[in-house]
Image (cartoon, rainbow, N blue to C red; front, top):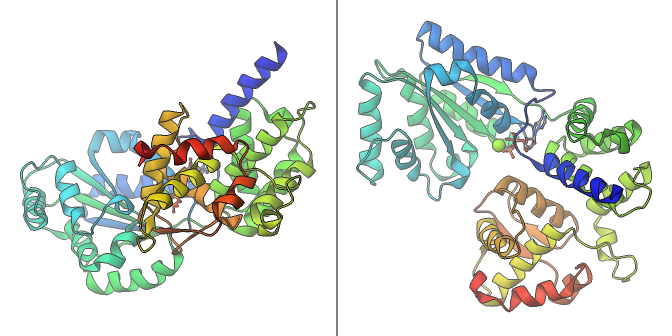
Length: 392
Ligand code: ATP
Ligand code: MG
């Protein structure tokens, strides 16, 4: 019985750790306050405004902005139009998406949508909070669109604030000066630096506390984990993922107390490909279940597609979701899926092209089926999946 209780405890803890939503965001108080005062000022002073948010992946940009969507200043004053540009197939579709979210029914032609949006902005309307997330995706496709949208706040009588979020740092260096030179209204800048060691440790402790399992994770183990991730990238997704894996590992032990060695074992496994190349069965660290399914999804797609045809992250994600549904497993969302892909990549199993991974990034398989077999807990899973063409 005690063990059962403990089991369900773990279940909650693990889901809390990969839950995108969180009620508090330690380390982001300053940025959230900047966003809030930016929006309040627009409402109070009626001045046109835009903002450019930058910062590397996993620094809480999206979640910080989302946390404000339920705040008074936003719910009382704004009509929220949130577009994730990484999810849009072609840059032109951004106008269609915005028109759809503004409920400007009718056209599916981008030019007509643009005209309809601009007409709407000139007419009397509730303030619009337009958030373009992952704009780097858009800018490489068609930068003119970005300049045009950032000009919208200057349209006479328009009542719109535009917030663009960019993920890659090098893009900020390239895109921002271009944007600044093309548009009349200079955007306010807000930077999200990588999380520091103590911020990461805070985030992890907070999540563990909420899950009621802070007892099993000693402070020195959290400090070690946070220090390693901070020196690597400061990406909180990695930090939470490693935390989950350490807990999963501890769950298999009788004495459910985490020691520094457990953290090191997971970190070495995640960040060194050498152990992944060690094919001695005894030593080969198996993949966590969801990562197994990602690799199986990829092998299934490969088994039925032409060699020359590139495979995208989005395609693997779609098949992965079907596999999860079939197996009654709750699939993770796209951002978690991308983190899993990165973890698989660090083991040298796949390669994802491009720095800023999104739905359209290409995935290349580096291992063959036999090598994959060695890192699966249950080889039958792969056989079943490869035989089920309905998953495609
Ligand atoms: P990307 O550039 O890849 O889009 P991002 O900066 O938008 O990354 P988020 O999606 O906001 O990153 O955050 C990644 C994950 O980390 C989310 O699941 C989020 O809930 C969690 N997270 C981020 N910052 C914090 C924080 N300060 N406290 C708790 N959880 C956090
Ligand atoms: Mg984001």
